[in-house]
Each structure stands twice: as C-alpha cells, then as structure tokens.
Length: 83
Image 1: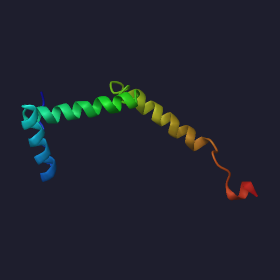
Image 2 (image 1 turned 30 degrees about the vertical axis):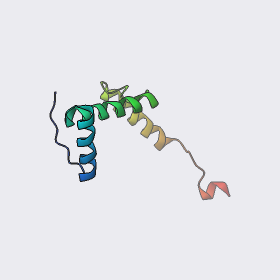
Image 3 (image 1 turned 60 degrees about the horizontal axis):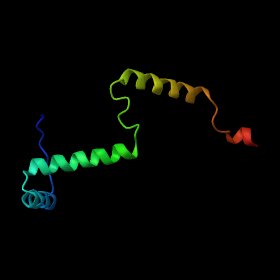
Image 4 (image 1 turned 90 degrees about the vertical axis):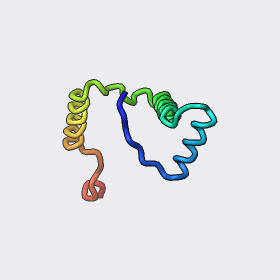
C-alpha cells in the first residue's frame, strides 16, 4: 500500500473523524472507502475512463492523428467564404 498525506479543511477533517468514530474504523479506512466509492461511481458513469491506461503510446498516436486532421480539415467557413 502507498502512503499519502492529505491536507483537509478543518470541517472536512472533523467530519472524517466523526465518521470514523461512528463506523469504528480508522480515519484512513473511512477515507479509503470514500475514495473507492467515488472511483466506482465515476467508472460506472464513464466506462471508457481508464480504458487505455496501459497503452499511453496508442493514446498519443490517436491525439496526434486528431490534431493533424484538425489542421488539414476545413471545419468552418471563414467570413470571406460565407459571403
């Protein structure tokens, strides 16, 4: 497990402490549960999130191709062309 340091506003930390006491867990366990719950929620909303995490080279190639296409394709009419 990796250790991280969080800086929380006083009110957020107080709520975390209270939740930990009520659930008889440590503050770290409650924070981990909250983070995992949030990540599960956003992953369910966007199934593509993280899909290519193991293939950054492919994503770089896709981006480069998209940028090249954008430079070459005429997407909008200029004021002179619309006249």
